[in-house]
Amino acid sequence: MQTTELAIPKRKPRVYLSEDFKIESWQTLQPYFDELKAREINSVEEMEKWMQDRSELESVLSEDLGWRYIRMTCDTQNDETTKAFQYFVSEIEPQIAPYDHELNLKLMHSPYVNGLDKEKYKIYLRGVERALEIFREENIPLQTEISTKQQQYAAITGAMTVTLDGEEMTLQRAADRLKKTDRAVREEAWRAIHDRRFEDRGKLDSLFDELLQLRNQLALNADFTNFRDYMFAALGRFDYTPQDCFDFHQSIQETIVPLLTKIDEERKLKLGLEQLRPWDLDVDPSGKKPLEPFRKGEELLEKTVQVFYKLDTFLGDCLATMREMGHLDLESRKGKAPGGYNYPLDEIGVPFIFMNATSSLRDVITMLHEGGHAVHSFLTREMSLNAFKHPPSEVAELASMSMELISMDYWDTFFKDEDELRRAKRTHLESVLETFPWVATVDKFQHWIYEHPEQTPEQRHQEWISIFEKFNHKLVSWDGLEQYKPFTWQKQLHIYEVPFYYIEYAMAQLGAIAVWKNYKENPAEGLAAYKRALSLGYTVSIGEVYEAAGIKFDFSTDYIKSLADFVQEEMEKI
Image (cartoon, rainbow, N blue to C red; front, side):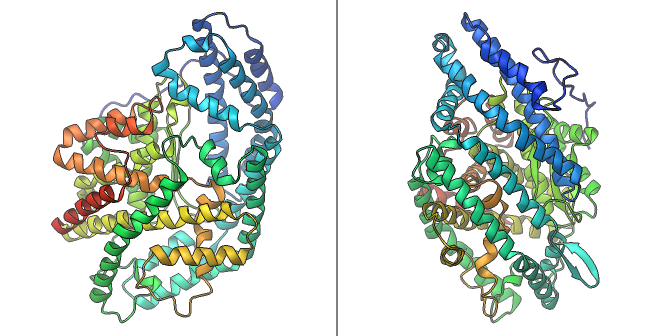
């Protein structure tokens, strides 16, 4: 394995805050905000210095919140870490919000703002203007209440376990049984998982009703018709509209859904089944045992580091540095929040990867995905303003989803057997195609939810079924399982915790296929373009980032079809 002598990053010397400054209370922070608010600015140079000082303060705040969130999600049953996070959300963030608004006003009303480098700051200033447009002081306590309620989702789902063969396990570990060749084992696991989720359906419905009303009020306060329109503004969606999303849903229905129906027909035939059931979708259709690419989290990490080094020295160094610094928590365990994430830590510039690995191919994909996000953090860590390091999700997810695909040439690190390697690649490419209809389902559902804030839970469940059946596995029979289907949306944490952050996955998945296509045609240039694009951070528009990567920001029917055809061709080669 290729390795280099690692230079473990140190935090940049602070200029504005003291080196030993720690966030203990609002009282320790307020003097810095007061100084920024009161400071006289008499030149463009002083304006830039003011912006950098503000950025340093934002980095310290962001990293402090990051560690509180990380510690809480690593152990949702720990009262101390939960209280530390809640303290920040309830006691510090509400105090910051009005100052942020005042500082934004100070920036945009300064006569020196027009002297700033237009190219360097255009995206940043555009975002500040949008923040000013949507800010309402009366929304500060609402946002605090929303943040607090959103935490309840992780607490409810993190406590979910099932007992199979006398062993208590997380739902993630139970889901590994859905890959078993014994159909009875799969069915037992599927029913156990859905019974456990079904048990808390009322809690999760009540929680969502509360979030729905709070979010709707937030939007009305800011003079928006609904929360969807508010979120398009808050997420900085300058490059597309709700109608573009609806058109994208339609294109997915026309181009991708028929391909997946064909794949399901082949699956049914290979498995020799009269009827496909929900527990038949993850098993290998050739009847072979589940792939087991690693056994423990340490092995998953070691092999992923090797894959990254084979791709590129810099990529390998990124993950090796995180390992050296202990910035990973990979294995599934009771009390740990569900899901996976890469959390950027803005001051040190070395992110943290959290996930719930068991021993599956899905875990390998998650690790590669979060590793792509991590590389993005490293590529932007030296940027002069904190805001430059945080591109929108359409770009962030391009980093992660592209990594899943461009790393495939080196998956023999995980799969020494040629047949297993082929199975792994084909399985993943099928899941790439499956991304599109699931994302369309979740996104279309969210549009409906916030266009109909007076809905009852029953209406919400019926709408979910209606949308689900347009996009997902038309050959799968839910006979006798009808009670579960209305609640399957509750497993999607984005709907609870990060509303409207989802369509980006499909947009970025298209982009990732295009990045992979370029990489297959010319590996050196394809990888260089990928890194070049990510290094731009958020200093240019989404379209310009995609252009730097040598691809298009386009989700038309023709473009989707051309890239889906490419994936099909690659699957046939395997």
